[in-house]
Length: 231
Ligand SMILES: C[S@@+](CC[C@H](N)C(=O)[O-])C[C@H]1O[C@@H](n2cnc3c(N)ncnc32)[C@H](O)[C@@H]1O
Image (cartoon, rainbow, N blue to C red; front, side, top):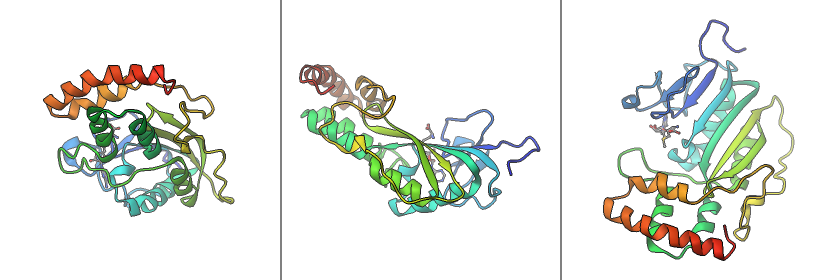
């Protein structure tokens, strides 16, 4: 049962600096000043079934790959039946599509950083990546039904999954994001998003000289992709 004493019934796990009002913001690094300093793989101090929503944005890839089921099972424990899990993770095939379409060193440096993390400080390493199939399977195994799954900015996936009290057989569905050839996302309601956003958000973490070259390379690279009908 969700709490009725005014305590948050929503969790923002691995919150970093993304503190959200109305959520219990959780991170294992106290430098982020979360409401609760804890490892998201073990939240045994929190009550089972007490939460209506869990957000974990850009978090699962920071856990070791074999900890994906541990974390998802723990998060399923915390949600009430019908509660929602909202995830964002890197999409390995999305990154591969961009790599294969853009033979530019600087662009590859940006995209490989997206995949493996900046590695600029302890904790900013990625230990896992996902495909639409592997994410759907992991969610199913932890007792979730996927309500929505879309590719974001060509290299990430956003998923909304619902905790159910009894899970049926695994049905992966059409899996539009498995194809390297698909130029555009084909999931229901998916909007193509400009690649420029990737350069703008990620290249900020690159050393200055590489960043400048990456930015200089980005626009001609994108123009070529538009001309070739890839974007
Ligand atoms: C890329 S940041 C994402 C921050 C935030 N969710 C956002 O979208 O801006 C990943 C966060 O996950 C946290 N994190 C990584 N592993 C964790 C763990 N095992 N337990 C709790 N937090 C963890 C890191 O400290 C970091 O703040």
